[in-house]
Amino acid sequence: MKNVGTDSATVPAGHDGRTRHAVARLLLEQGPVTAASVAEQLGLSPTAVRRHIDALVADGEAVSREAPRRGQRGRGRPAKLFLLTEQGRARFGHAYDDLAVAALRFLAERGGQEAVRAFAERRVSALVEQHRAAIAAQPDAAERAKALATALTREGYAASARHVGAGEQLCQHLCPVAHVAAEFPLLCETETAAFAELLGTHVQRLATIARGDAVCTTHIPNTAPITVGEADDRTSDGGEPA
Image (cartoon, rainbow, N blue to C red; front, side, top):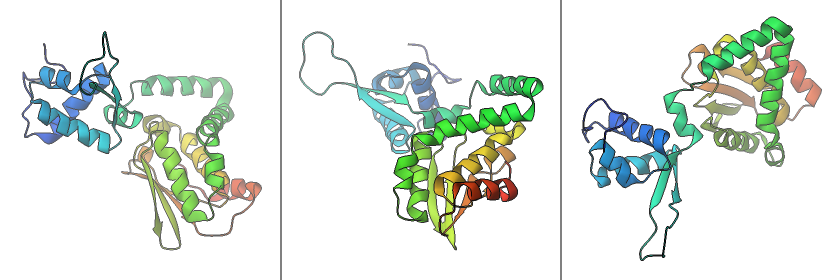
């Protein structure tokens, strides 16, 4: 079969970064697909391909599913099919970024910044609302931050939370809308406000991928919860836009 996703007939197995990227591209373009098929198309051994696929699965960039059986059930375990997760797709960028920017420009021209803000608020509300109960059930700021990180990871942000100084630090290692947010920082502002309301405390955005930082970082103080109104007021006054 013809090679797909590479410039040469084979991919040197020692070039791990480029090889893994080529494997991931085939999962993106053809998944669900077997490891054997990927190996054949890239001219690699099945063992080498499985090593890269296992690494992608371990990093949350790929998942597996059993291949459907055809005909009579044979002996042995069914073949596994692999495909990328949303997190895995993020390594290739987002083909719809330009379309999204154009759509928001049109919205701003027709409805002004308030229309863009309303869109941004609806978007982030849909993002976090389904996780509200799980986050609110946590006993303190540290656990709420971890629950929020878990929720964001499920939404494709590859988030983590850790204790730093007098508070918690929420890190989003991927941002599916970074390119769009670079032109429309309201997306980051409304996200910060939503975090404050969801966590019940003032939060401060320290860094964003949209501004060129490596990670979106949000500081969450270990303080007593505040009311929803207070969270909105403090975020609008002190939260840093992306």
